[in-house]
Length: 399
Ligand SMILES: Cc1cc2nc3c(=O)[nH]c(=O)nc-3n(C[C@H](O)[C@H](O)[C@H](O)COP(=O)(O)OP(=O)(O)OC[C@H]3O[C@@H](n4cnc5c(N)ncnc54)[C@H](O)[C@@H]3O)c2cc1C
Image (cartoon, rainbow, N blue to C red; front, side, top):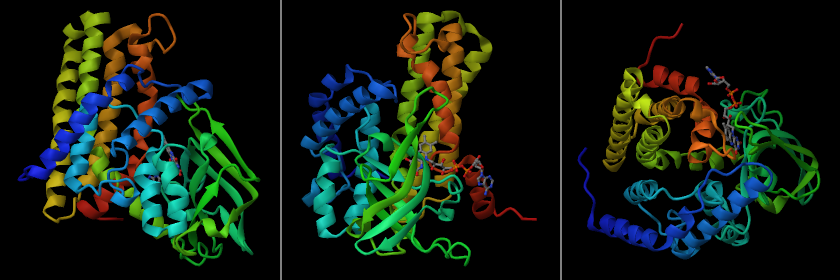
């Protein structure tokens, strides 16, 4: 590891810290374990909206956007400092994370001036919520297999088909969707072609969102059904058939987005030890649990070093390979390891959910245990990452 902060990086960090010291306290008091259904979701979203608006007032909401659109054009190192500092300060989530980190940059790169003017301000000010509609029942890890179809009809496209697992679609005003505009491309063996990106008005006729109940009991993501739903041709992002390129450019954000992960995990470990000390102190004398705590501690440090090595390579102009799939696997495994440890450290109290009089930390550990299962599939499924490492990094022989 041979990088050091430049003076402008230190100035960036100090400015962010000073701003957070001034602005964050009033938002921290309100907590974050929101319910993702009904009024609980709306209350959580109201808090996130207020926090995103405050960030935007300080120009801290969309650090990667161009200055003319309210951003700071941050460097890679500044992105890392931002992720780490936000983790250190335990900042709440924002209202339009997808919009700020993924969809906004797509519109900036591929959109017309009219499209930028129409949509970027609402993303930034949290006036309009956005969702991202890529996955389908037969197109998840193999996304290019998507079949939800858009057929041109004059000034519109008519959309038929369905999407699944679309986070917060039921409260979104707009969504960025990948749709199939060349239905013959899959059968012709060109499945990455014939896909087009569209911005969809989620309140348009012919669109129905059905929330899906999750293992946590929440209902945060949705099936989205299109039945002869009209989408204006002027809402197409990029050219016809360019959808794959439009989408792939933005998924890379996750590479620096994980820089703060080990800091968050360290806090999580400290929080569960403190909770055990208060509610189930015998657990801290159990040799097996003590061994698991020590293992968690060393694995968190290993995660930090893995991310640091990836960053070091990027700063030297090298590819951060194979650290990216390794870091994904490590993050997923360790998140679940910590979630299980949190529940076991609390003993019976670990199962008490939010809302009950004896729930520890507002039921955080009971909620986190099922929630972290998502890390095996989100941002690249475990088996697919292992295949990538086996094929391209280790180059294991194939049958
Ligand atoms: C919390 C959460 C939020 C999400 N939000 C959104 C969203 O807002 N918008 C959106 O579009 N999508 C969203 N998704 C969907 C997500 O992108 C998909 O779940 C993901 O792409 C995996 O697709 P799948 O669910 O169809 O699983 P599949 O791809 O069908 O995988 C199922 C299992 O098969 C394994 N598998 C698949 N292919 C292979 C292979 N070639 N070799 C070996 N094993 C394989 C996988 O590892 C996995 O264990 C979200 C998912 C989660 C968990």
